[in-house]
Length: 261
Image 1 (cartoon, one colour):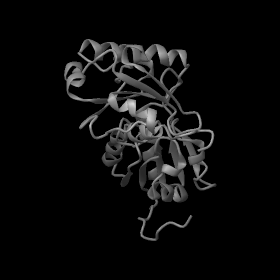
Image 2: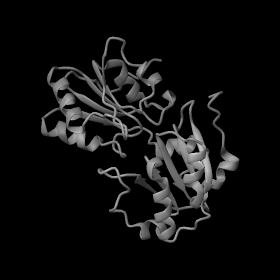
Image 3: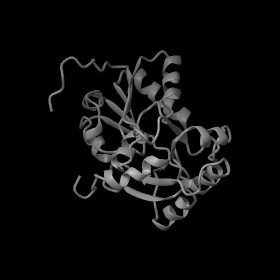
Image 4: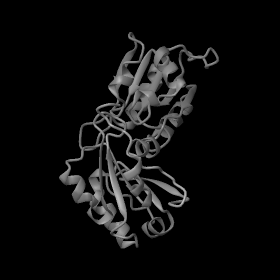
């Protein structure tokens, strides 16, 4: 595929923070593909699909920097230091992240570290799972008559627990559609808190696992039963939870068949 000549030059000593989207390589932006073709070093996360990595320059360095809950993982300061060191060595450094780097991707922390070190960088947004993953599950993030607002919430904080800084009363009462990233470990607790804050136990909910990949799985159930349903279905991470009337539309909009693409 030929790319436009007008795309910006990826210069040595620069770092590009690039969103790889939720999984499907076809969801990459032209800038993301441009970066993959020109990077000397690719520092990538666990959520980046192997098919996307295969698009990188054959002779590029590959640096795994995945962080997965409950497993030995790279520390964020070490990842930032690696980006800085590679850039100081004069390499074109591609920091490749699943979804969007600035939506629960800790891209801001890495960009701040680069700025402090005097490293020039570019941010290339990607399709975040809260939009693209829902679309592949046949669930619109917004739909006329169903909601006029949507909230993205992390499923856990820096301690690994359900975020305490969330005002569950306001969240449950004011936002029609809630999308929780990285929610699998705390599904039962999240549902319990929402119901205690006034959300209906019968409200439709869905868990979407490995969105926009051949291993995508979607489980639907009322909010009060969604944790048990996900457990019975042996849902695997990464997974997100969506709560709201838009989930009902999946009955009509479930278009994606992983076995046929």
